[in-house]
Image (cartoon, rainbow, N blue to C red; front, side, top):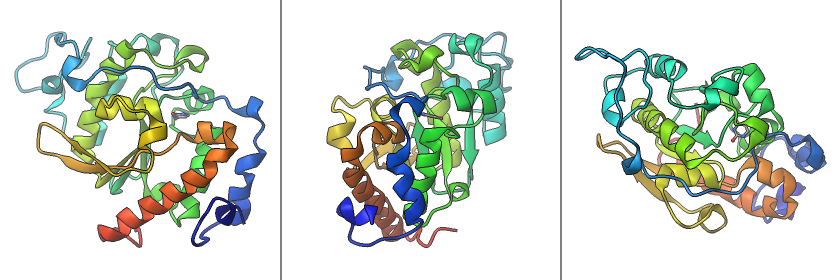
Length: 266
Ligand code: URA
């Protein structure tokens, strides 16, 4: 049983499916898998302006976004529209699709990955490639279906060749992700990998140190949520030895949900 091999206390879910974690050849991993790059804090976001917004109405096309630009966007649909109209991230020019979110926006659990890969770019949905298949299995391992969680990325367009997003690209997209969290108000945010973790929390320590540790995110409108960083699934596909820690972290997520009265998940 793979969970036991990883040091699990109990075994839950689709064991056969989870065993396939180790069967994906390295060459099949097309998602973003680069190590974390330095990322900007929310405070360092360049303050530019929208093109011609009228007082009290959401701007149609932003060339750069500040939290103030987005504060009137109160629904996921309105935010998605604003992201699709955003002209401040050059990655959009080479991408096929904007990749905004998938799953259940009412879920108390919000996973935040790095950036779309090739499959995600083609389908316009996050985590639908090999990393996404592994994420689904990790969720199933603790009894969660994909449609019981909400999934997004810190970057909405595929970086060419799946390179790591630049600081500038992360800074451009971050206000949208923070507003996304303010709108959805998840109880637990789960950054997947070091790039998402650094972008969201502006921490200096990496994912290897901080994975599985309960942290907190506090936003300027008073939104507070727990944060549980996990290894990125693409990293786990390359680094089989990290699966034991990943399983322990999934059990931590389940315990956090239980402690918050969020288990069994609906
Ligand atoms: N990797 C990510 O970080 N996000 C995706 O959507 C797919 C792969």
